Structures are given as C-alpha cells and as structure tokens.
Image 1 (cartoon, each protein chain N blue to C red):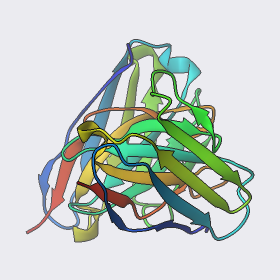
Image 2: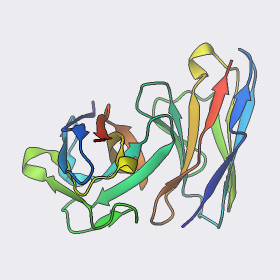
Image 3: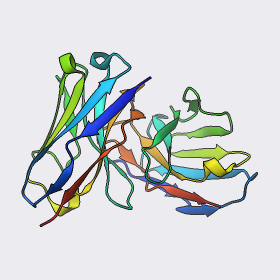
Image 4: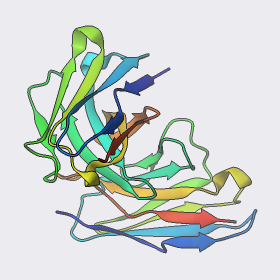
Length: 118
Length: 106
C-alpha cells in the first residue's frame, strides 16, 4: 500500500524558510516522478512542482520558481520541498503526491500546513 | 497556461440521483484529463485519468467522457459518501492546472 507522510510545516514569518519532507513507502519510490500540490485554506488545488525519477528534471509553477526547490533522495525514499522567501499567499496545506500515467496525484499524503504570518 | 473551467461551481442533489459535472479547457488537451474527489479535511482521491479510465478500486458509478476541450464526470446513484468537492486536472503540459472545483451538496 502506498504511504506518503509529509512533515516540516509550521508557522513562519514573511521572508522565512522551511524544508518540507515526504517519506514514501509501499512502492518503488525511485521509479516514480513525484509532485507537490498545495491548497490554500478554503481554496482549490494548485500544482507546485514535479521532479523526475532520478531528479534530473524539475518543473515549477511560475509563482514559486526561484523561491522553491524540489528535490529527492531515492536512497531514503524521500521527497523534499525547500521553500524560501515565503509570502502570505504561500499559506496552504502542502501535499506530496505520486505521478502515474502522467496524472499528478495518483496517490496523496495527508498534507502539512504552512502558515506565513507575522 | 491552460485554464480549466468547471461548471457548476456547486450542485445540490439527493441520494439516488445522477449528476454530471463539466470541465472545459481553454485549449485542446489531448484527453490528458483527470478527475479527483476531495472530502473536507482530507487529501484528494484520484477517480479517473485519460478522460475516461477508472482508477483501480473506484466504483463504476463514476464515469468520465469527453475529448478535445470539453469533458464530463458523471456520478450515478448518489450515496451519502459521494457528497464532496470534485476537481478536474489537465496534465497535457506545464503548468499542470486544476479546475476551481464543484461542490456537490445534499
């Protein structure tokens, strides 16, 4: 059974940084593209970033490019999102998700909440 | 960017009803269209991919159709557990984009 467990969220001031983590189990992590998707409180889903199986390709939504960095450690079955220069509009639940048959979100974690506020 | 527009934004229905949700893309997406269900406080769940293919374990009461720019999700014989918010997603290119959601209420 696929399990994705996010961690690392919290309250951070504008301009601050966090590193979000996603621990994967129940599947061959190194064989899957992975993704981060976020959801602001009471709002819809927004794709954030994708990373290829070996980390050689990364894609970002324009609003986070240059501030967020997606990475992975296949030896640790872990996915990461380094979020820098945080803004109030980055406040959201951040979900880790698998990509299968090119669909972002074949499986999802439970999410980790990032709140940007002074 | 490809804009995904869902209609209606909200929908009231009764147990046993059949409902249809529409998703329109701002340009052709080669059937790279997925549907998700999300219940309050929970992560989304994948229902359909490639416009009409059912994910493993998803009941056949859910069906998807469409091509090009216009797609539909149909849910037959509504049960209490089906009342949720539904999202479409295009994955034809970057950025991946979602519709704004359709809230299905009793």
